[in-house]
Length: 504
Image (cartoon, rainbow, N blue to C red; front, side):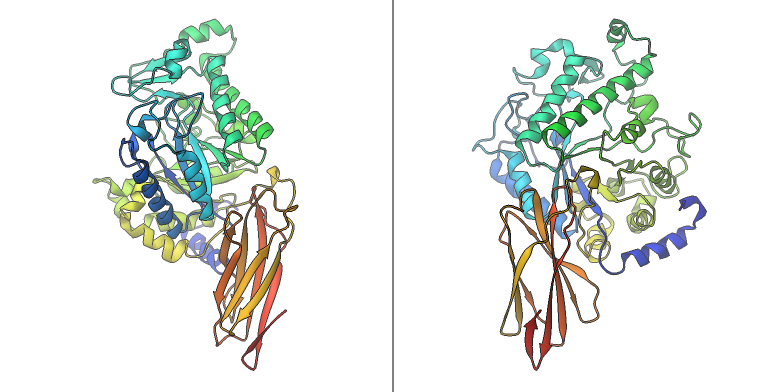
């Protein structure tokens, strides 16, 4: 199926059919940016109580909107939102780099627990190369890596970056990733579009000395791409060795290459591309299986004259290479005063309809959290009351799986013919690697739907109200593992005879 051979109207009709009944697995995520306190924490102040309360409020908001993934920035600039022997506490957390929370707590552990208890995934978002956010104003601790090993870094504009061509700098970043996946139950490591920095007009990135010293026969552009390839494959390897079920995702700029530069490129007129300007060859990484998902930042609207949403959606659909593609939506644009097209409340609903009707596209990721706090264009209401009204599982990554989980055991009891209780009976020998249990329900003429998701860390008992007009109710209980594969269901059927329910 190719989008360019199908009208928008027919796609929307198809998507309406797809949306009927049980919700298919779908990635529904939101970015929570911490750099410069974009989304969280609200201010650079050492106030753990407020930080916790604000994160809980955000997690609840996004859960209500139907999200199943939070992508939280935990390493914005060579710093950490968790205790680390490698990098200092972030200034965006406490106000001063290197200063620990007081009273002490581990923000990353706290956020993972709060996210998981709501049945959502936690993807740890890292910036690989940014080391100092602003060389003029940033707080830089005495033990920051830029002070320990200044030869690893390059200054460009008002920022300091890890030198992508420095092998020791690469190894250090890989060690940071290894430390995170070894100590924390993150569901994925996530990196955005900042590889080599976006170019500053009239200024060349100052890596010529490294290029000359490398002795490479590659052109400088190919050498730069090779440097990015090296760190991606190194991260891939350490993650597979340390925690093979943990996914690795990249959120690139929307355009790999324009068709004017490469026949494999997209029908776009982007002034910047991943391949030519950021030196990130996303397609190679997907072809080689070094990453598990890609989230292209399709931040412009349907019909844009240079980078049209629908054209890039179709292009990424044809270049998934068996891995997942989640669309990055630029909902923040609705808050920009002169963006007339983004004042249209149907823009995001129409984007969702298109992606749901497109093969090889598994969901959405929204930038960013604070736009939902403002309920721009009423999109909170659109999601929670319509498009995300029914819960959805995160799509499975079977290439990482060791096999489906075992069908769970469960007991069903009724109380006063008005309530039914389902209690999962976990087998300790078979629950390792499980995330949660799912209970599906079908009653009367309604469709089968997810009625509850019970994280393994929470009480495994669920109560449902029985409708006196129903004559039968069916439940299915499944187990879901760390790679989101679902077990064969355990079915329980209730039938009513003479106002008495019997359980089969």
